[in-house]
Image 1 (spheres, rainbow, N blue to C red):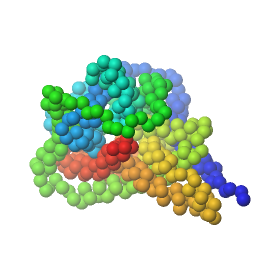
Image 2 (spheres, helix red, strand yellow):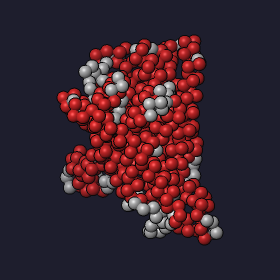
Image 3 (cartoon, rainbow, N blue to C red):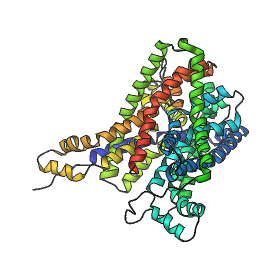
Image 4 (cartoon, one colour):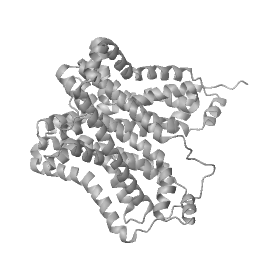
Length: 509
């Protein structure tokens, strides 16, 4: 009897189409550059304004990323490898700032210190908003490390500091590089945070050019420079990551690592975690509470808030569903049919997630205006932008969930008379459903806090929580903006809890 097999042809076709569509932003940048011509393009690129933006961006990355690394590694070490009182609670507080959108962090600090602006303000708020992206992988890696290597280093006469720097820190290299890349890409893509701090970056300049000149050549050329910066950051991360191996045969000792006794350092350690939680969580929540108390019940415009909340939830659910559906073929191929061609298509899916939302939005604006005008500022175009921006987030979750479904179960189902399609629906889809739900939640809650692409692509009359918050803060109506900020935080908390739980589950805790 001939064994039936599940054909990968439909998945290859669908994944290939999505891969081609994901190349649209880079294709747009290249096409605009060619169409503009070298003389005009060079005049727009090689000018003092671009140099100023490049210096601002480089300084921001050069200062904010190292500070984020130091802070995240310190917090991860204190919460995972020391006898710090209440370590589990402090570890949650180190992840919780992700529930507060970056532009809400900025809103809180500007409300508290109106004179906070420039590079110093940008670095402060950026570190507090984005260091959890480093804390999560570093703390997870610390939980997975084999303590035998530290024991061996200590047995050679090395003290705790030398053991950390020469035995532990090198093993955190991948986590630090990956987290730093996430932080750097967010810094390049962020808009609202830096506008409120009054710190010019490429993203703020692009949006300003777009709003003043409606997708003029200057905005397009700045978008091209921003794409080059993103690819440059990817290249630097790959170079620093290197090709060293971090895995070995065997699972290592099945025991928890030794907790360092802080002793007289307990108070300084407590002050570090307390100050970090106070600055990253206390300031936003105290500021929100202050404005909500000042505004009273009158600040809760229930009709407007209800409309914004409803539209936000609809966009989040629709975008999450669309992104998950178009990610399934690639996730299936990456697990069930790996190969060189599959890796190329997968790279196309991942690269688009490294592009700032403003570049993706510019590409879609240009394409819809010049090729298919009826699609300009429609829900379809906005959802498509969300799908491109959050493809990697969906793909990672789907790939992990499909990988956990044994292929032998599908083969057994087909041996019992089920068709390949029935085997996939009744076996794979059911077993992978929890992972699919997690991916949809992560994408949907990411869409909840997306601002730049929504501002540029949303249909007329759209009023999401982020858009309403931004409109009111632009008018310096901080009292009116507070309820919208609070609703975004409340919608983001489940995503943060999910990330925290997943991080501990993957590390076996």
